[in-house]
Image 1 (cartoon, helix red, strand yellow):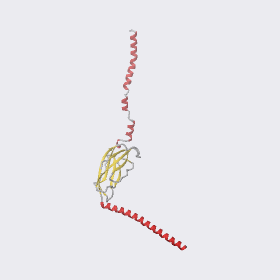
Image 2 (spheres, helix red, strand yellow; image 1 turned 90 degrees about the vertical axis):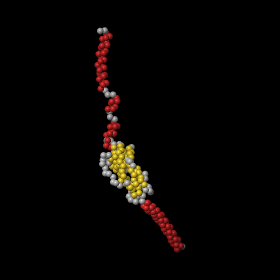
Image 3 (cartoon, helix red, strand yellow; image 1 turned 45 degrees about the vertical axis):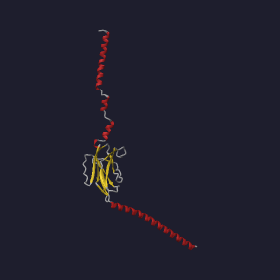
Image 4 (cartoon, helix red, strand yellow; image 1 turned 135 degrees about the vertical axis):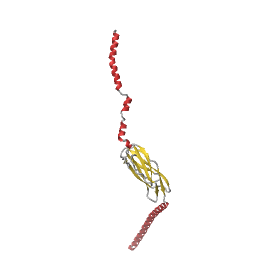
Length: 231
């Protein structure tokens, strides 16, 4: 064996262990894509722990009186939101209602009503949504002066904080129709009563001013007579 052959044999024997060590280490190490897939997203983990699945789906129910007579009391509407699996009492035959499943993140809510043909109604306060649900009652005072059927719907604003000051996720319910029956004799009576109130107010002002003027003239005459007697 020549000197060159001995040199190459020695070099091969020296590099063989290093080669096997590198192969074994590369086989056990994960690729960057595998590591990224295995590591959980911190934001996702936080969101899942903060908002469990049972709070992601809600049922919104809008219930309203079927017919409003202006001669009677105002109409009543109720907006309810809660767990879809919670069994509620069915509305009475005198009511109309609509239900809708919504999805959103947040355990706090503000409830409101879209009713352009009725007097403005205030939005509810910030409320927690328990599994049994929460509701808000609204009173409907018609703006219209003629008979007809008018549409209303509900909206919900979902929040993640109990102050309801963060950005919200707004959802809408389906529309229900409310029939309004105008009592025209009541409108006439109301208008006459308003006119009488205005007339009475002006009459009181007129007679008050007239009496003040008369007393002023009387006092002036008395002062003139007293002055003439002294002279």
